[in-house]
Length: 196
Length: 137
Image (tube, rainbow over all chains, first blue to last red):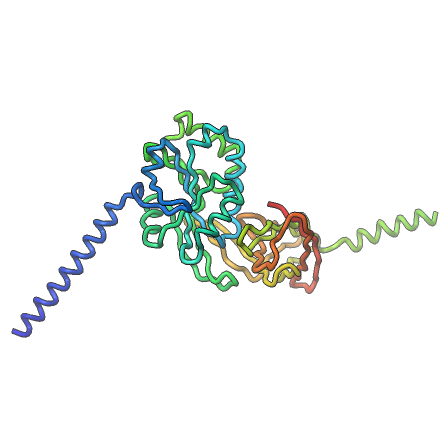
């Protein structure tokens, strides 16, 4: 009798675990990054909202203690923005998505971003949301402990993700691309040749 | 005649004592608002036949300097501290964005374009070189 009870209990426990993990996976599979609320300095927005405004969405993922790659990319994009005609610039939303929400704050993200260009809009997500969001766009990041004053760093993808107003993921802007190449790539977006 | 001798000596000594190590284009990125971390880049030219290693860098504008390397690995930019930076005999090693660089921590005052900076580089052959550093974005 006791043995039976034990068996039933463990079977039930196993089923509970299976159901739980199934629901978890299904939840992630149903995850829609376009409806993910993105925290900005002036309220929450979603990618769907930006799409409805007929905007190309550029997303760069980085963090504030990033000493080299992030400032290089943001300053190169600032140069690009300064050369774009206003009608194109207005049709682009550039999101700088923070990968270190445990340390960074929105206030510092805003100060940092506006140093480069007002077009750069900081976004913060919590770690769980970041995990799902980045996975959808194929962006990898990993916190790595370091024997350094930094304590840790975040290894991360460095390409800028580009999404069309139709929600299609287009060719990313590769890290280190010269300004003329990026300008050409953006021009092609507006001429409808950006999709592939 | 005297003048010529002097010129000759000057020329000769220049050749004889041409520095083993030359630092070119040393530059530092201005610190960004709210940040106390930044990076130094430069070219290090080794005119000698022996390999040398940069082991340390110090300056009065920040308490901590580290040598770092960066590289792409599996689609991610990976940055790691390194113990030293090798400059092979008769070659130049470039510290630049996206590669080897010196990281500067906890600068108490912002690094600004209007100011002048300098740092002391120490090599494994005990040689020490002081270099001026320009501020560049």
